Image (cartoon, rainbow, N blue to C red; front, side):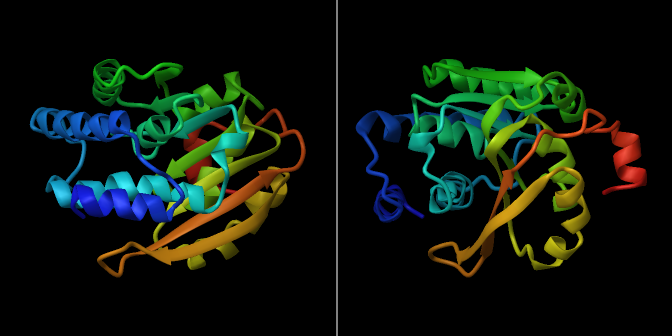
Amino acid sequence: MTEDNFIKEMSKLGIELTITQLEQFQKYYKLLIEWNKKINLTSITQKEDVYLKHFYDSATIVKIINLDQESTLCDVGSGAGFPGIVIKILYPELKVTLIDSLMKRINFLNEVINKLNLKEVVAIHSRIEDFGQKNKEKFDVVTARAVAPLNILLEYCIPITKIDKYFISMKGNISREINSSENALNKLKSELIEIKEFHLPFENSVRSLVLIRKSQKTDKMYPRRVEKIKKKPL
C-alpha cells in the first residue's frame, strides 16, 4: 500500500488524514525501522507492507466503533504500538494507555510518543494481570491485537473495561475461538455484540473485529495470575 493508496483507503473508512497526521505516520515508520534493527518489533518492514498491515489494519477498528464518542482507551500488549499509537494519531483528543510487559518495547513507544509530539498518551511497563488488578473498570475502550486466544484475552481485558463499555479484539479468522469463549463471556459478565469480518485491500488476508460489551462489574478475583490462566483458562 503506497502512501497515496493509504490516504484513499483511509478516506473510505471515513478518515480524512491531515498533513500533520501524514507526517506523524512517516516519522512512525522511520522510527519503527530504526529501532527494529536493535530490538525485535516486527517482521514486517517494507514500507508498503507496514502501511497496509500495521497502519491501515490498526485503523480498521473504526469499522466497528465510533471513537469520537469515547474518552479513554487502553491497548493491551501494545508491542510496537499497534493499534494504540495509530489510534492516538487518528484521535488526538482520546486519552490512550499502552500496556506492554517488555521494557525495550516501552522505551520504543516512549520515543514514538516524544518524536511525534503526542499528548495524553502513556506507555506503562506491566504484565496485564498486574495492571488489571489495580485498574478495574477504568477504560471506555480496551483493545488487543492478536495477543492471545480470545478466552484468555477476555480475562485480561474485561476487568479494566468500564461497565456498559467495550473490549475490541482484532484478529485474523476468529470463528474457532468464539465457541471456546462462551464460558469466559459468562464468567466475566460480558456479551458478544458483533463480529465484523473483512479482507485487507490489495490482498486476501482475512481480518476480524470482535466487539464485546461489559454488562456488569467483574468479580474481584479476575484477572487471575498468569499461571492459573494458562493452567485453567476460562
